[in-house]
Length: 227
Image (cartoon, rainbow, N blue to C red):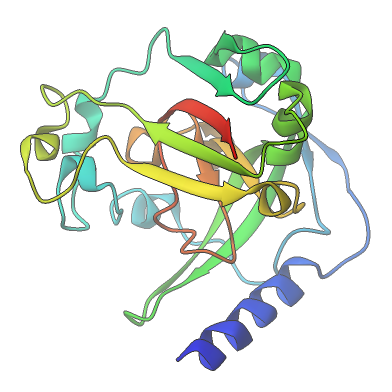
């Protein structure tokens, strides 16, 4: 199984790296990403057809709202206005930043990533965002920082599954510093040319093509650098 997964990961990365250049600039829709320009990155893309939005937006993993794939309606309860992310731990100076300001700090690009699952389904989705490495550099981690810990929100009144005791909420996920600097590690703030759908993990989520990309941490509120 491990050999199979390693082989699949190699194929996915190989496909993602097809092509050699950034192509034309795509203008984001009005009121999406504050009308910022979004670069369409053909080098990190795939030749597969994009899966229709009405399918990908209604078949999701977001365990805070339920353990089935049909949680998109329940996820609309999530409040994403005035969203603030706390960056802490082993950094030069901890800081807090609202999602609007964070989006304005970095140039945005569209990447088309393919999802494959052992459950025998697949999706191809155009994500908009920026490399995680850019945020890592901006955070100025200390030399002693070896890992990054991400936490999502905790709001049981909105996300009813967080009342359940089967998991120690809020959800936490980690990366090594080396993984965070891989160019495929992507912080997503939009999809299909729009601000990110709530069921996708609005307003900001992580996407790692080599690690269960479909379920990577969503709705991030805390990023901590640790030893």
